[in-house]
Image (cartoon, rainbow, N blue to C red; front, side, top):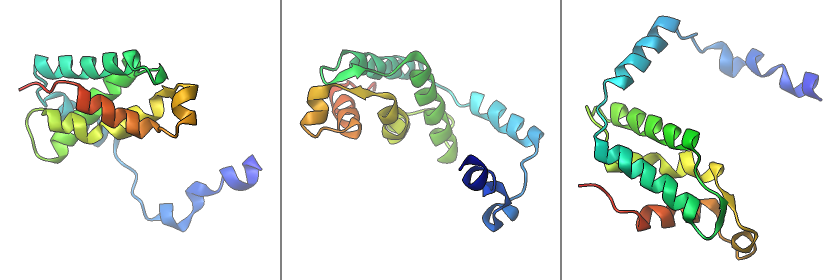
Length: 132
């Protein structure tokens, strides 16, 4: 099954037209992302979101340190895509569901009651103070 379905994806006509990105371009993009300023209050905000997920009663497993780093990295990318020079709380919020939801483990009670990881992320975002 792996040979039949797993190997031919890159030979697909969809991928044939895509150009290969130059390593220097990728390195330049990464360096540019590091120039996007993150205020200390935003670092605290990301930590507060991670802490809130770890303390949430409907979760067995909250956002890990690597998850918090991914959230910050994604927020930087969101800021860069909007042409910003710094990360805003809205940048963090804009990427939070995509970054956080699949990293959380619901409690059995939450799953039985039909709550989703996305619902919990929205609850965490609503309950966490946003820096000004």
